[in-house]
Length: 410
Ligand SMILES: Cc1ncc(COP(=O)(O)O)c(C=O)c1O
Image (cartoon, rainbow, N blue to C red; front, side, top):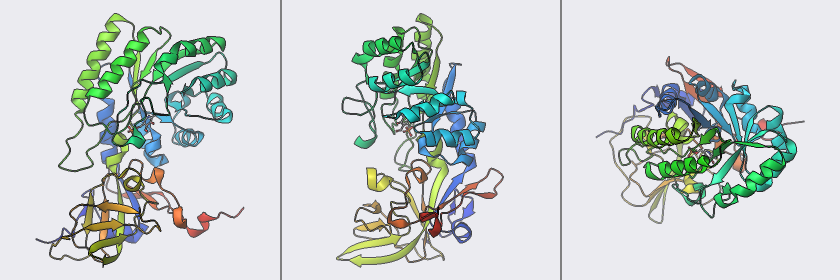
């Protein structure tokens, strides 16, 4: 067996051609996959008054945001920076929702000045919005007391999560809203990230609908994001979107029959962009220390923090420069980056082919929370991003930083 030296990224472009032209490490996106995922979500429900808000925190590259806009998704924002980038990508105010968490008066004012719909997630922030925009509309982010997710750091609902207004505080929220003539026109929630089964999400959606029964001013319900992707290829089943859509449609249509028409939203981030992104890198050093093999590469946690932060799994392909016989490590092997931290581990406890200096690497499914969470830690400039367009052409969509960018002169 030979190592698949000719493996192309997204099955389309030679890894070394891209690295030679744009440098390493490098974020690569596939437009076709991005459009496919957008369309799957747009078609999730049969219920007609339905919008998908892409949660842009997952990836705010403006060129990707433009594609997402063309695919008729709306957007969420978590900060003025995200609103700024979304506006740059051509989203009008009505298509943006600001889901704040502990935001300042100035940040709230930023959204109000642009006519952007705001969700607040505490009574304290509701008072602040009342002061900034008396007489306006507001969405309340509720914490339903239940959470879900792949890691404790991404469970955003439940009694220990910092997000949302507790259900028991709703009467007080109504009193505050009345005091400032605010109309509660929406309710939203987000219980956590990366679910691959439908039950908890649908149960939480049904609960939100139930709460809306008692609040006649509510016209919009946002069930949240969290739709997972199978990071472990061949081992995890895809989230069954057809089942999710069917089950959500059932609870929505039942509710509407007994109540009133309502607009439904969801706010997925990862599902939209994770699989359309990959990181290319290079093996820079190999060694065996005290019977443990270390493959050193140029993809540190400055480039992709998910494995170090959440112990997340990404499939990794090794692409040798020349064909050679396949052989694999038989003991402990760690794929590690260049950062001066012992936690800078990209992969461990898995079967990896024997690597050599100069081999190429593909880290798969890195489009969500990849570049968006990258940093210049250890003063390493941020990498470039390129897009493989539907017509097969490759376009640079963000230049790599240079050393000068590390200290911009005034
Ligand atoms: C409020 C909110 N909405 C949506 C999302 C998107 O989550 P995901 O990328 O898992 O779909 C997040 C992620 O943490 C979030 O905090």
